[in-house]
Length: 172
Ligand code: FES
Image (cartoon, rainbow, N blue to C red; front, side, top):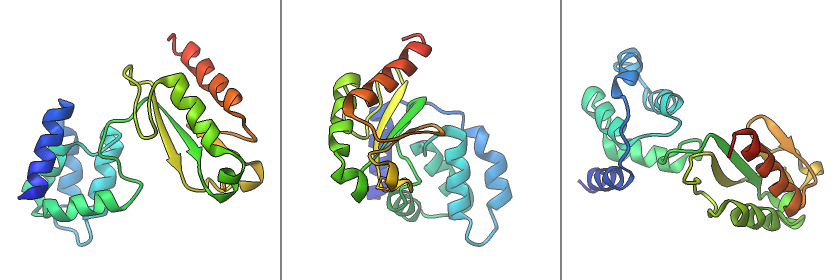
């Protein structure tokens, strides 16, 4: 099956290794419940921060949920991640208000500073850079969010400064 192959290739490419026993209670809880796919995927992501390929396979084997359907749902909804993320997720808003206020400059400045592209994670696992849709505070555009903190009316330089300060605090 194509999805199976994609998942296996993805797994060998990323060389991840996760403790699959973490999701045993989750599977037990939702196994025979109707509409269990989303709660199982959400719960799995809560454990690992993303949806590891091995977890898809285990869930499918133990619940009977089809790999292709789970993969379809996981790729459709933006809440789900298929790759490991960094400790800090730098979300740069690219909604309309932020876009017209130069959100692209912010993303590019951070890309240069961290040496990664949008959607990627730094090698040290500290930062993931993500373009996101409206963060709901358009009057403060352009906006960036890291953890629970929202940074408003940013320039590229200010955004880089914020990221560098976090880096220093993390001892990098
Ligand atoms: S468009 Fe960026 S917060 Fe709304």
